[in-house]
Amino acid sequence: MEEWCRSADPGGVEARKAALQGWLEKNQSRIAAVDARVAEVVPLLFPQAKPEEAMANVRAQIKSMLFDLKLEGKTPEETVALCKAETNPASPRWNNNGMPQVQLSLASLYDWQTKRAAQTRPQAP
Image (cartoon, rainbow, N blue to C red):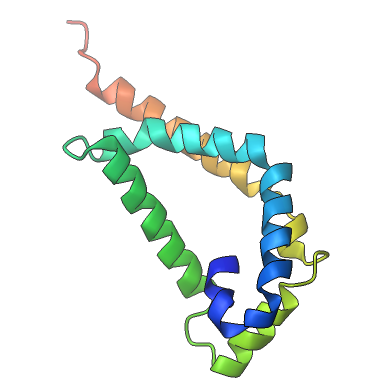
């Protein structure tokens, strides 16, 4: 949101930037855990791709999905209003750590990875 709102609400850039930085600092360990799990799984999904390129593509896809979820179809006025609301450091966006969704997502990735590993192991005769 911080990035997308820069042009829609230039007056709120510094406030959103500060709120994002605070959120990133508070959630640093959780972000690292998610990044590590995704980095384990992405090469399994895209074995022919270079891991760095695959991760960049996954991040770009997630970013696009979030844009679609939050801003697609909004009028310019609605976008500005949404961006102005995000300048408030008390906004839920800057005070939500994503739990339990993060835990569920990590568990799903782990389950998928475990099932995949079991399927690719040679079976005993």
